[in-house]
Length: 183
Image: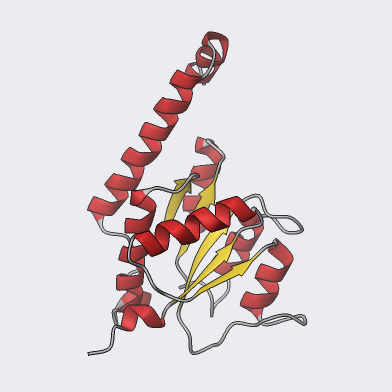
């Protein structure tokens, strides 16, 4: 039987070469062999998804998973997320936010706009599990009716974020720790 998850294309909207290479390496080491398309700015990402402009365009018959950096040049990731999640044809594309921003406000906004996961860079094993699980879910016939990550994976992502934020706090100066803890 053919593996339907490999039919899913992973679209990586990432302008930073080392971050893209790390994402790709982690996915391959995690056994994810799907086709990966990289787009390095926000305008080209929108053009691809909305099938406009001169560059490559999405295929209507292909399922995509979008790994979206929030701080892209030309059009920011939040605007891309907003446009994708309010578009009739694109709103079912799952989106994993990849960012180096440790902002609870930004994370809450991304979730309200419809992202499926908010992952801090550098990406880790939890990121690979999120991508793997979403490719499995996208392959199921009920995907468009229920685009929700399983509870155990949401818990893993939250723990990964909490651990990363704890590490960040312990790596900063005492003055920074006080100001961050008081927020």
